[in-house]
Image 1 (cartoon, rainbow, N blue to C red):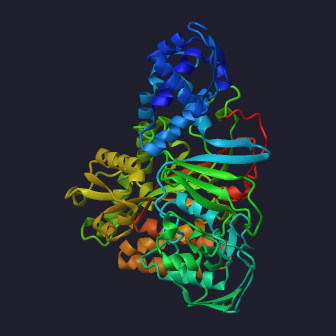
Image 2 (tube, one colour):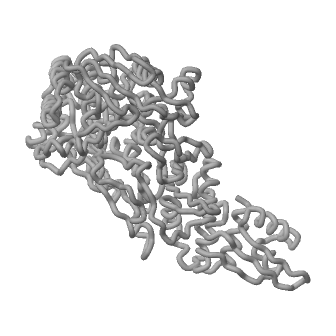
Length: 632
């Protein structure tokens, strides 16, 4: 950061507050520059030459000792900050360390007008919308922060909802599904038919659809993708749906037939999820691991990694549904920028609630600033919950003991603990309640919008508080979760201690959490996001929970889940989902801690946001209104 330090010193000395957003020009002597840069006159010439090569300054030298030359500072403070931020990513350093090493602390110590509060605004302006002009070409860019690295962009190996959202931009499925409208729409398949008994599906593929590497997509790619999904093994997301496929064949180059074991009302919506994305057979068959960080699909955007910490999505001009409006999407992995998170305001942001049109600064950016101009749209609800492992020998195999324990771990106490630890970061937390509210109409769950409710997550919570029973005090209880939910686990642990219980917390990787280690715990804490795939996500949760339920409860849940799979009517499915939740909460194996309403924040210059779509916004639909954009 030596060259950045030199430029920042010049900006400190000669850039006025007003000029920091433009190109200040000053008349200065070499001796003055030597003093500012703390170097010899000879080194001044070397530094200026390097700064000119990097296009930081313009230097118009005048011959003769003592004569003043013209120095033009070409980069604003915002542009300097953007370079420092990119350097932090490339070096995998904390941003605060890079700033300190580059001389930012000097600026803060001098307390130039506005400098003390400059960092939040600079971080805010670093992300968001930007329009640049390259000769006669206009380039529209959106830049977003990622709070963790991307582990996989292979559709069958995504772990976080963030990854699934990006996969949707890079790949296409046979169909798309919108829970707000309840309709399936054509995608790679332009039409489809189903046999009267609901077990044989025929899909007719579009011709001329290209993968990003230039190959035309055909029926063999579809068959390969679905068979690859079937062969993936394990308990993957939506596996209870796709394992109904018993035969997939290419009837001709553009016709695919799929036979199911039995009718499943979720099959067509499943084909619209990221898990069912179509991949190129020629590339993946020769390199099965290729797609993890080098994805190739048919989607509206193609992948280009700037380096391991910056991921770039570029508009794919030959997309079958037309070119995207935005030319470039930049995703910056900022997880290591600050010692305690992204910013003090958002250090505890959830990984699964990736806000697609979000800016880091939580405070008002001031008059005319970005943060003060945000609009928001509600896109879904994130829920945190505890499930009880009733297969582990011990007191929690008794239903009354489980109910007593969950009463002690009161959602209100957990939310109070989170509020005390995080303050405003808790946002719109609704303690306890239900995944599905009692007064919610069928279309509400289809849109992923869950209204507030006084519904209680366990019948036992309606009883007066109890002291811990001797059975619960015999040994410490063990709770497992993933690092993303460490703060939630700490709040549960504090509530347990307040109730007189001993509870230990262990953090597992997502892969470990999905594995057999979960059967060694007493309690499992996790989250679920109810968006466009709300019904599928809830059904997935209940299928997974059966793996650590006692036989009686597991059998009752299985019966209801079987009925759910065969239901075509949305209202019937909603009532069945409620019935499953009641069964599990009454048995003391499911305990909803809180719900958080999720919003997308966006600048008025951004068009293409449809609040009728549940879940994250599709990048393809976004477009920018030209503004007086001064970002460098």
